[in-house]
Image (cartoon, rainbow, N blue to C red):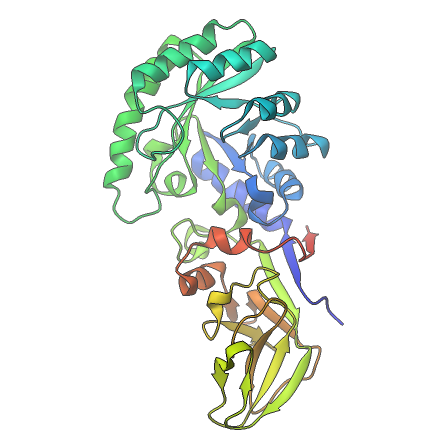
Length: 365
């Protein structure tokens, strides 16, 4: 009998996606983003696969994530991209990770603790989150890093807000704001790593590649433009499966699930699949998704509950124990994370990040 829920991760796909992105970005280096447990795929095995595919750098959002990678024996340059508190700073430094700065107070805090820590200065060119909007202040921060005896001025960076959208106008505005500041800083500090491009920018905009691209979603074989990863030569690395635990005849007027959100209009057979929102199958997919059962698409029937969903198997049901695929491909049929995201009105990132910790991950090469 199969597991009630299982996320299979193809590490070979992550390696090949990384090799594809590294080739596209060259001569820029590839930084593989493995935050949020590798977007739900498993940070440590994903990091190893990405490095095998040509990723020179790794990036995470938190100091704890950096420490977790180092504890697992992951080497190589590592960048903590997010905000870091005083307590977290000690953890980041202990993990031999570079950090990101945008004010001189933080630079002083790093300098008081560190010996040789790399610092990347962030200019906010339009994302409106972390970083200073003032290029003069960003330059002062960079010079403070360069002057501190215990620090290395390692990089200059920004982040794009709309690189995944069809209209490139704002992306180009951000590039126009970032390029002269970064060029001036690189002239004053030869060898400085300039980086800005995420997955979407790396694939669509050569001018955004600079010395390094920071790719996350594309490393895992998902489309940064929210359509079809195959259009960019990417392979989805994750599939999510369960099985048919029960098969039940359903007569006209009979219902399934909380709130009777499915009431049969004609005689059919229902299958109960033991996976639910406790595993990351969002309740918003109620009557709003399909699964692959025995190689064919069948619709969800009724409310997604915490531990179970039901599907309409039609007049010719398969036996109990038959595999059910929520994300993945079987034969000619496939269900992408992008499809589920579109049904939910969200993005593919949230679909895989939302697969909960109670779903085992099985990593295959």
